[in-house]
Length: 435
Length: 160
Image 1 (cartoon, rainbow over the protein chains, first blue to last red):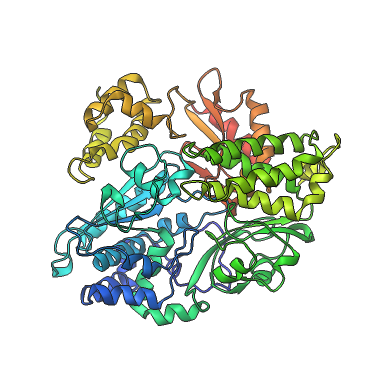
Image 2: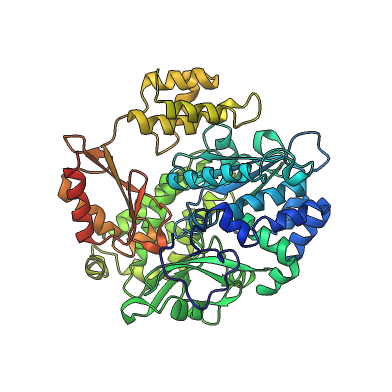
């Protein structure tokens, strides 16, 4: 099902089957070039598959943006251990709701991506780790997996080859931290989702202590189009060093929020005003989060001339992230935004690393005090100092993910913190209530 | 413990989904699926799952306390989970949450006296572009208005 109308400005590659009748069914998939890329890959050497993914400039779509082909090349194919394909479908980054659509509307594309990854690294089993809240997707995926077995695209000796592959779904049970790759692997092994120290990276010691490719849903879904149409064609859709399209979730104060597939390098201004139909109620843009709440926040001025790609965002000291765009209008209280974001990280910190466990909770308490009008002037600097002391001091990126937006909001919207001092009520509260 | 044939089939499939000797992997999905059927994670269930996956009950308890969807106490028949995270906050999620609490007279992780409805303020549920959003058990409700929330809660009260 689609939850918002498509935009004519989209470049539909991964979402091209969206809206077809029975788009999730294997017959629809096969009638629209489905599993052709897998058949092509069966005739290719593993190195050639990885090379094609490298040529495509596909970068990880979960948030970190690491080049996928390079990640795959780190897997020691000659290891005597079994290798695994793991799909991160634990989509929980606030602002992000795109993997849901890929699994709901085109589950076979994901399965085909897993199969091609399996061929590339000699893996014969794959796990789709789906967040527990997405129960209906587990049902859709299980049905697609059963269909694929039925049609000879999963199981033994696929399509007459000597390649065998099994696929399974695995339900999480509520934990943002399990979207972090090493915590996900712990969780997949039936443990608490606490992160592992790296190195070794999952490519060498991953699922069940074996070499593993672990990518986001969207990353795997890009692989069949890359193999089918060639890596160069995919690369050409995007910008240098970042090929293809990105499923972008427009959220917050826009007229037409929704998930749209846009080529990498799409201008932020056109994304908000043409794809998103502009800011709600004709208001002005105040703040912008490019890819989920873990990204440093940008001001409206910083968005001028900005494009949606990894390097352009890095130049602004933020991240393209997961594609969860949050748009905030001029009536938004940034203290409240900082508080809500920190409440989330304090709730989700797994507690393994002390700077994250304590830092998120302290900052949450200070921000709560601030928003209640009992902030002290010193607290403004204290917030920044606390956050900076979390940076780089944790096993996994959750600590940084909590600290970075806080630092950016305190630095860029300091006057809003000052406006909450001395028992003054939140200057925006009235607008929020009537919004 | 005896479970429905459907749940037993799920368990059987889960226990063969992982590499040999890795049955522990099935623990969390088994607990969640069983909770859906019996209403909460009882001590009897902890011991049963421990036996089936080959760990101690203490190891199951250690794991289950980590996951926010696993509950030791029964929830309402309809568990209403309202998101107030960033995208929902910007579009009225907080007002929905307060409205639901006021209307039902219960708070976070509490259930109505008749056990019909329970409430939980949840973190991002992955419906950000169609905010504000909530889930009733596993069903998503998108772009929920205050009036729709009222209607929804009324209908859940009446359905017995």
